[in-house]
Amino acid sequence: MKSAALTMALAIVSAILATSQATPDPSPEPAPIAEERPEVPPPPFSEGIFPCSDCHAGMEVNRSRRELVDFHTDIQLKHDEQHRWCLDCHDAAERDSLHLAGGERIPFERSYLLCGQCHGEKLRDWRAGIHGRRTGQWNGHKQYLLCAHCHNPHQPRFRPIAPKPPPEAPRRPGK
Image (cartoon, rainbow, N blue to C red):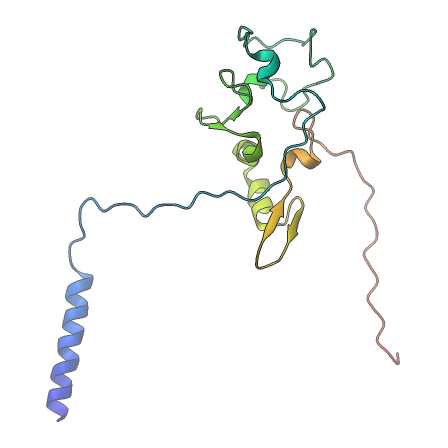
């Protein structure tokens, strides 16, 4: 009886080892990656400026860095202004979209991907719910605010805020 059980165990171990050492298919199909699409409210556009194509539809694209004097005069670029220009983020061909550094066009609702190209640690923290505002259930449905809901993308810094003292520990009854 012991011999039969030992023989069976050796056969199982041999089969497992043979399977684990099998040569894999040289061109396996990669597993599809689920596209991340957190739920976000609409971006906070200034009144009357979206869709951009309403005004930009017939305009010639001007890629030169310059002061805007005809329109968008209220925008002051204070976001790496020595190296950045409007068309580094806004898509020149499809004005109602943004574009990533590699050229991929994205809607304004996915602007977190654009911000995350330079601010990767903030994007990581935003996804985890540490940076920015996220509402909903801790283990279920969530809604995220976009970076632009708290930061002006053209002037993203917050004004300094004085820190508040930490909360006091609750007192135990009877002490």
